[in-house]
Length: 130
Image (cartoon, rainbow, N blue to C red):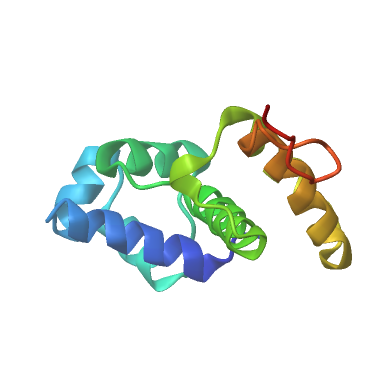
């Protein structure tokens, strides 16, 4: 769930990243300085299209995307997986693992590791080399 605080912080972060005043940002979005001020204080929220415009202008992810990215990062950390070496197969499995209860994540890690170690058998034992 995205809160008013997430959105207000996002709006302010975008404005600061672009080094704009509230009035300048309002001009770019076709609204008033009062709107931008109210968004930053959490009194009102911009429309979804305005949020998308803010994201496009700044290159910052939307607040709900950031929360999702944080959850993925936390899941990777809990599984001991380096995101820099993550394959597409592993990425798909990590998405599925996020639905697995914490108590079963060890089993899920074994499954994911099968895709990263091509020498491994599904039972987790190394294949013998001849």
